[in-house]
Image 1 (cartoon, protein in one colour):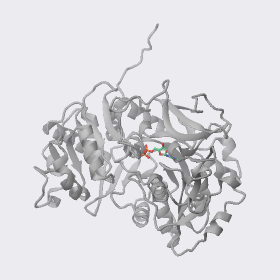
Image 2 (cartoon, rainbow, N blue to C red):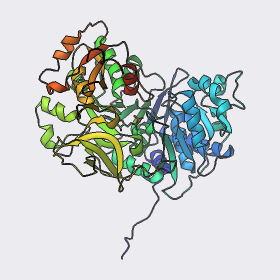
Image 3 (spheres, helix red, strand yellow):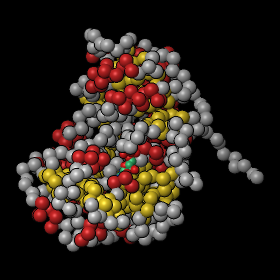
Image 4 (tube, protein in one colour):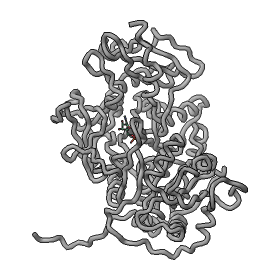
Length: 541
Ligand code: ADP
């Protein structure tokens, strides 16, 4: 064998920050703070403060591989910890504050977090659970002295700004093996206990490089990016890393995620690119449309985490001139797996056919390989019709959970999503395996039915669930939130399905509700709906 004669440098997260400081140090980072005001500084400031925080963590006794937990919104201090903790060789563990306190306590203990850093918003939450967090040696409030509580039940509560100011920024990021663990995120655990996914420096940097490419997030120094996707769940889709790599202006929304606050921030900071789950965009669109507003700078939005209804894609594109990129991923994939950018032959399609393609979750980016398999594990055709479990493998796909459990089958990770792949390589999720409706031995995809319901002008939100049926095992039931001020009848809505799906796919009934429960990551909690409406069809069947 003859070796190549090129430099060998480990792929480290600190190298992203070093690059940002040296090559676009003046780039701006703007944060709406929990404290209520707007904070702005540059990548150069970020780098210096991240070095101080790395020293502060070391002074608290944090060393190689120790876990530092965060309970925080999207903001500059959270960003500093992203780099400080991973960069020094410890593990950043982002916690989802929307989880139930019992689950939170379980996760902190399971991860053995040594330090817990949290935003002011979460002071009551941390006070309530602190006594149960046996592994945590230091609690740090991510604010300044002026916002420290006079009294608290949290033992020895530390102030983030005090820790930061106590250090100088003279610090060299250490070099180590790129396979070292960098950060930790637990799956939402809609079934059973959540599972820890432990990312490495290498997997993170490779994900960053691939995710920023033009056919994926298309990140560049010319963008002003606002991630609505939280930094507390799967690294805000990698945007905090990509932004450093390319030097994009970053705009952090803090805790204010309602339509008005987001719109105001888009306009004030000239945001060009945003990213979030469909439920967030729905609130934004409602605000914009009911107030007759226009987006003056926003040109693209990335929607994923749950299926994006074509009606939403159409609203953004045809009514507001904002291009939608539909993407799919999961915690176990760091998270990006596919993005629905159009190949030239598809970009030339008429608007309706184009929309049908954009409703798909898209094609695999380089670094991720995918296939669909039947119940026996045999690979299915890429014909856009055959549906089976989606399997993936790649540089940023989980190999083992933190518990040591190995989920893979012959080197492929089973996603638990059921999908098709068409001849162009576009993957479309028909359902999560546990949400599929099994009617008379056949499968009905709930996402398709939801998309049709969502296209009805009087529907604000729709979930389709399988409920027990004496003859067919399960039948689809549609749970609908009407738009404010609209009244909508069962028959009117069911007629809307005529000709759009096979007759036996049409839901058996519709129930109207005020709200659909959302989980910790803003997705509809269909398991709760299934529980609530378990007996719904039996009396009429
Ligand atoms: P959880 O929902 O359990 O928290 P993740 O946050 O990792 O887990 O979400 C991953 C799941 O979200 C995927 O397996 C898939 O079911 C769903 N998902 C993500 N993006 C999309 C999308 N664009 N369309 C449909 N489903 C999606």
